[in-house]
Amino acid sequence: MTITKKGWNEQLMLAAYLKETAYDAGVAMSSSTAYSLYGFEIDPDWADTVSTDKDEVTGYEHGNSQEIISKRTSFTVRIPKAKPNDIAAFLALALGSITTTQDSVNTAYKHKIVPVAVGTALPSTQLEHKKGGIQYAYKGIKCNRLTIRGESGDEGSGLISLEAELIGSGTRATSATGFAASITENWLKVQNASVWLESAANISIAGTLVQGAEDISSATPENLGSRFKDFELTWNNNLKGQEGFGGAGVYQDCDYERRALDFTCTILFNDSTELDYYINTDALAIEIDLKAGLIPTSSLYYYGTTLIIPRFKLRKAVKADGGVNDSLAATLEAEVFDDGTNAAIITETYNAKAAYLA
View 1: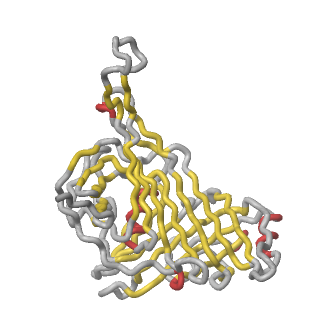
View 2: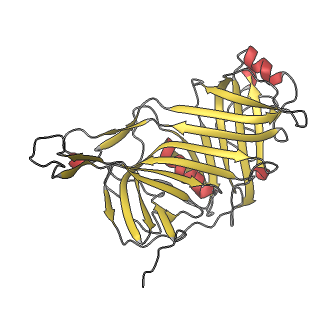
View 3: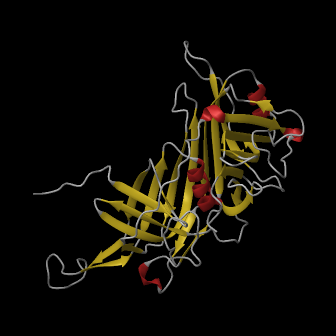
């Protein structure tokens, strides 16, 4: 009797809490170093370089030999209903600089995650994937691109989602390691979000962020909450694998080139304010603050995530879009700049996990 494999019987485990000590060194997978993703989609790709002798003179019409010259592994991970732990784990991989603060002696933490300084290597880690009864461990995992999205519940899911493009060294091996438990947290909902926009001289980014309060203004920023329809934020490391000589056909390192941040959002159209921002090339700052329930035992921190872009200008003219029966909306496209003081993106995520990529 043939026992068919079931598509739902798939597992994915990421070493989100411990980084590799050296690139491609791997991580000992356990409940203290890794977690199993829940509600995910993954598309592993083995884009190996395979060579044959069909173009050489061998005496065979169809050739006779084939070898794998280099091993390549990449993955697209999608989480349609992201939790704070998912956001922190993938932000840590994508941005790389993590500072964690504990709420007194409570099991509650905030994780400030920003891009690593130029010249500082991104952390790498390990993941394991099992499908069809076959489990593989992949080393040298870095995040090439991370996209975080949110869409209001009237037209979208009302939830925060993420999509991460990961690149491995190419090292892969079958594994029988047990999968760590998944993390119990609620999904991040846009109904728990506040959104503020500030412009020009009133932009002032707080050195210490206050969860649930605006942190981008020296005055009173515009509260976009009721007008905000959706957003998409993408950080791109533009990773380039380094094979070199030696290395047994896998990358010996993987480094970023010039990094980029893209941000777009849709708001209900009100007046010419946003168009004037474009015409006047005003500098803008935006903050999206998702604050949900109090973390158990905590006196200060609530489950959630804060995303801040300290300086951008509008890339295109802002126009009112919509049909005769629609509420008019407008799309804002950001051209992100350095402000000379802050990171290009500032994030903080709050939950009960003590550390990421330590």
